[in-house]
Length: 191
Image (tube, rainbow, N blue to C red):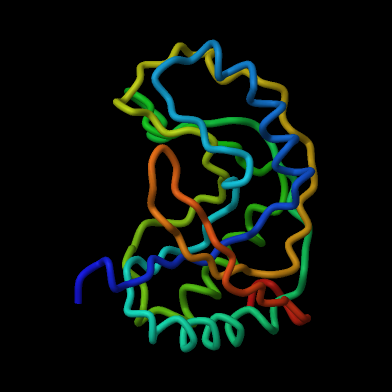
């Protein structure tokens, strides 16, 4: 089956419009002082929990059902946005992001819950580092030590649901379509 006949899926945290605007406003100075990056449009800002990759369309409903089961018993929580950072941490930067000053452990626990519930469907095995990607380099960029010296966002994000997204690749940016918002109804976010 060709990729044209498949869908590209990931699970993440959809951000409210006000949070996306706060991220965009706070990182706006970087857009003029750091060349060589493609900035993520505000409507695309999200936190990825796990990536499923290209899958046959008939796998969407089973993934949605397994994801709903995986997150239903997790308790909603708040995470607080913090400072900007980069990947990799040394050498030339490829990705700029906004991290979390609080709630990172709960986000990691939620990502672990999602990954454990759908382990047989995962296409990546990278460690989870909670962040919101704000820009990607067209080619790796050398940054000065103070290039990302912004005031921390200090904005709370209510984490009450996990969203299953379909990614529609395109230029200059992909489009992310929310397929399902799967509520976190109680229990412990850790397990």
